[in-house]
Length: 477
Image 1 (cartoon, rainbow, N blue to C red):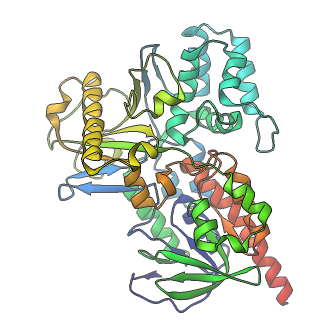
Image 2 (cartoon, rainbow, N blue to C red; image 1 turned 30 degrees about the vertical axis):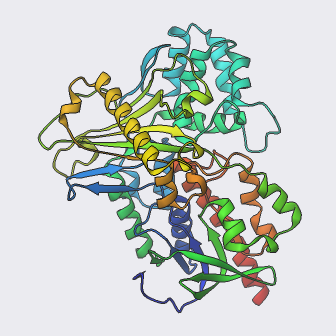
Image 3 (cartoon, one colour; image 1 turned 120 degrees about the horizontal axis):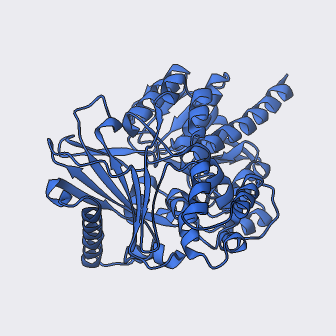
């Protein structure tokens, strides 16, 4: 049932899910299929979380915020935990390009082609390349290795900043990884991405979320939008429900798809957790944020095919500081051709993405903020003009999102586009050990961010919640 935002929910549930990102939605759908009563609460006016879209100029332009791109594994996950119709609309991108002062490469983003490029373009022996990919393939969550990404690349490709850029730059945009993060945060994600290329949902994010919403309702999930949870109720170290708009909704378990720190410190409260857990939670670092520039092409205008994803940079070398700099030396262009939404009138759109630090935007005056936003837009327009000469004259709408925009619409602390750093994963997965019936499925640990990571984390936590409820059922009997 879809509740209106003004309705007071009187029922109680097996599980209440706070936040309708892909992890929360996938968890809710799986648990409802398994026969559990589920309520999904979302503070925004639509489902999807960061997997979202918006329209401008009376619907003339539709922009996807984070659609490009995800691994082939998303097909299997959607087929198993959603439905065949959704899975069948996931298609592979044709071309991913790199344009920077160190090299220019076009790839289909498969492991086979990366091996070829590293060998033929960068001159690395096949023996070294195979050893590198073998180490990536053998990485797992339980590795105790303290090696970071920078050390991993130096181990196999010493002194080759160009290869570091080739391998790491796409993952920086996918999940916020940088040279200083644990190598596992790169290895697991990139191994998955490179297996069979990069994919997109044909039909656009709006159609995908619409199909997911239909599936949720069909399976009996109750949904309420514009329902911001103020508090998670704890009684005798057990979850008892949530508070929404001043009233209580009762349940046997709660799953937060919200930011990890928000869940612990604001929704629950520190006094409910052990000092040891809080010490770990306070050490969890938030990941970086991002900026986007949305460019709409005039009705009737066309642009040539120049690739689906284009990683561009004016920076001479790759570094964490440069890629996060407000000078915006690096940008990724996601180019949406008419076949992205074949069911609509042919239209083109371009979205530029750049990684950013929240603190570089937070304390600006209103005038400084608008000036920096204008600079961001101009960097994107001049950047895409280099790839598609003359395209600026074909653009009739442009706007930008900053870390403050991310914070406003997603409620992520500090506009953290990619959740937390790696240490957040242990805290997230152990929350139910502190409070019975309290679980977390937000974006944590870098490897659990991105579309596939989020959906799969929802599945992992759904199993944990179901095991907990089963134990309660046995105790009652």
